[in-house]
Amino acid sequence: MNLLVLTQDKGKILGPIAKYILGPILNAIFNFLNWIKIPNVGLAIILFTIVIYLLMLPLTIKQQKFSKLQAKMNPELQAIQKKYKDKKDQDSQMAMNQETQAVYAKYGVSPTGSCLQLLIQMPILFALYRVIYAIPAYVPIIKDTFTNVVTSLAENKDKAATLLQSFSSARMYSNQFANELFVNGDAEYVKNTFIDVLNRASTSEWESIYANGNFPQFKDVVVSTMEQLNRFNNFLGINIGNSPSYTVKTAFANHQFLIVIGAILIPVLSAVTQWINVKLTPQASNKDSSGNQQADQMQSSMKAMNTFMPIFSAIMCFTLPAGMGIYWIAGSVVRSIQQVAINKYIDKMDIEEEIKKNVEKRNKRLQKAGVDPSKITANANRSTKTMEVLAKLKDENDAKVKAIREENEAKVAEARKKLESSSKGKNSIAAKANLVKEYNEKNNNN
Image 1 (cartoon, rainbow, N blue to C red):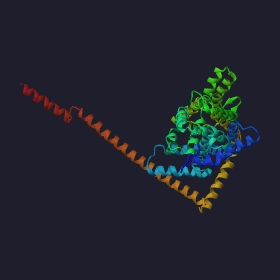
Image 2 (tube, helix red, strand yellow; image 1 turned 90 degrees about the vertical axis):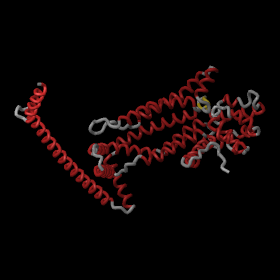
Image 3 (cartoon, rainbow, N blue to C red; image 1 turned 30 degrees about the horizontal axis):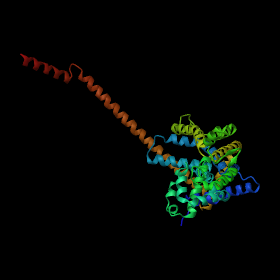
Image 4 (cartoon, rainbow, N blue to C red; image 1 turned 120 degrees about the horizontal axis):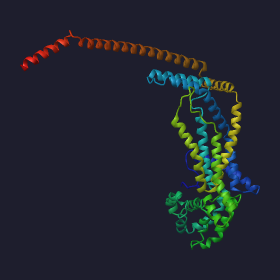
């Protein structure tokens, strides 16, 4: 039986990363905070984000190094592209590929040099989001807090399901409510589904469980659970289980204006820190070595995205639980600090020494694979020269054909000009023909 383990991700890639790597790290951090008597979800999220980004720091540095090398390679690569810009034949395309590969070999890097780092980082970041969005699924202490209330609700499964499906977050779990395991009353599945919904429920939704004649008998257990979750979720006076929009509305009604300001600061800081992070990240130049505009559409799209993302972040943080906003703020701050340090490190980097190291590493990899690096380079250079010779011969042949064509066209034009000139003379055949025509027309009229 394939039971859902709360909201743990079931993806083939993100699932294992979240369950076996990120989840245990977050659980260890929260257990440590609980041990020192500070079991705070907001603080756990901040520490968790810092730890994960520090672990990914070597990948980030490696990616930045490749960007630096790519900036140095770009003039050579762009010169090759310019050289073969209008040549679409197979020989020219092969020559362009060979010359491009020779440039990458010269710098000891692969054309896909930064892809590997991104392929490793992106699943981790997506899984990180999943873990923070479903903390009870990965932190048993927090999940256990829900046990009493969901056990009580499970005794009245159908009525409880009707109530919980009216909650704003319930749409995300409509498939779970319709699942055969839930319909048939599988105890573990039902409880986990209830926890999924309650984990994203607002304070007013929690209170509705025992209000309005729903389950007044569960008031004590619901209030007790809410108090424990509030202790976990209280961060600087704000319940990070609620969204800033909900907090602003309720705090304003209760004249708690400091809490209103704190809730508004979460989306604002999320947008500001992300904007700072974008500004600190090195941006690709939009001009090639000859000063011509390149990839205008791509540059325009990137600029629009860099402007839009901080705004989008603020909007999302205002409507999602405040814990997600704290995660985004912490992530942006950590990335910004890292970027400042990395920029200083990269600026001091001896680029020629880095190229030398890359070439040595590449040669060692080739030697381990039983390939002689010198032969690879020689073959590449030989192939490149051969392609260059063929391309040059083709260019010369095309030039000769063009010259012959232009010469023939000039001769034809000259002959046509002489013919037209002779046809206008008085003694020309055309003139005599016109005299005969006029004589015949005059006689016919008489």
